[in-house]
Image (cartoon, rainbow, N blue to C red; front, side, top):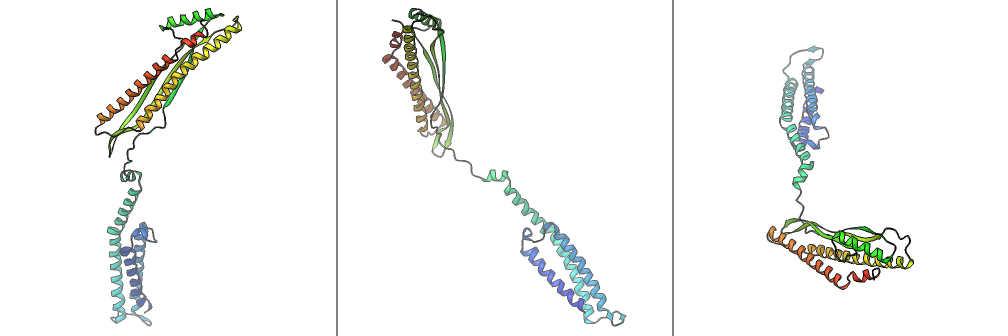
Length: 302
């Protein structure tokens, strides 16, 4: 009698749990691991069979005898137990054919969205920006050529000999310099413009070096120091002009406009570079005209 009543009650509770856990709630939110739901349902099917058999047997007991009875309790227990097992089997099939696959599909989608490849595709591309540099790169090297002698005349002759060997005329020292530029072109919503770029100023300054001052008078030594300082200062002024125009080129690239075609942009970049180089060469010539090496030469060779 008791089991006969508990059987439909247990079935009702199971039916409610099926609705809540399988139909109304996503499998990923279950308090039971989705992979174990099949075991849970299978265990319940076994329990249902046990209740069905137990209820059926106990419903046939009449005091000390076991007999086949067609009373209401017997029919109710057998019918409900059979229905219980059938519906549990259907529930298990429903879980295996749809519920678990649906869960796996959703889990795969979540995993895909968390993957770096998905995020890389989903993220918007970085907006191209106009190139900007705070200033040029300066590479400066100093080197020497050696002169010998213990008097002013000997030192001057040694300087003139070096000039002849170098194919130079009236040159006490010299600077080799150039201005390099490297850039990328980019396309933006405003048109073509300059992207990342670099401007590099290279300078190699060559000045005279007295190999040995042994035997020279104090006056000769003093004149040599004045001569060398004047020569070195002159070449540093040339280097300063180089650096000044390297900064000017960076500033003009930083403020370069936008163009309809890449070819027009490259033409503008090349013209900007050419204009700065022309200005620099002119400035170097003007400096030499105003501060020629004759003043430096006069310190030593009178």
